[in-house]
Length: 134
Image (cartoon, rainbow, N blue to C red; front, side, top):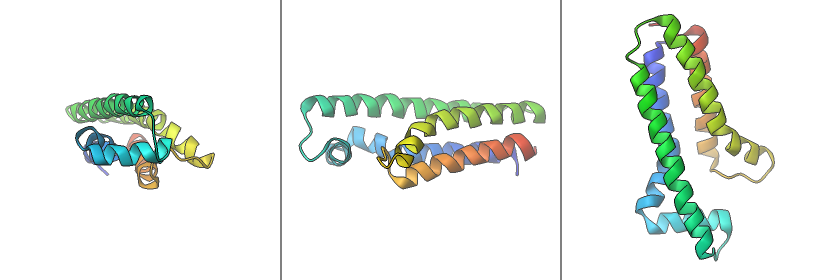
């Protein structure tokens, strides 16, 4: 599989993973659903404020990752692309690790599809670092 195709695919998957955060920024109803899932039926004002900050910070970090990944498609050397793909694998791993740990502990912090998308993204980056082509 072409590494640049992997990069574009992973960029889309990361955007889909972060989509609930983006929606919560613009939709008060959606935000309250996510907040109540995490903090219970009657969240405090502080809990809502914490979630709003979390959604903004993590959403912007995900957006920054997407731009960096897309920017990496400008590299022309296969070995450089493979090395960068491995670095993206590590970054995606640390990005997905909190959700995966929460799921394994039985207290998921993200919906299962988001966790699965994170693992798929990691797998694609790792595949690109080992067997990617131009």
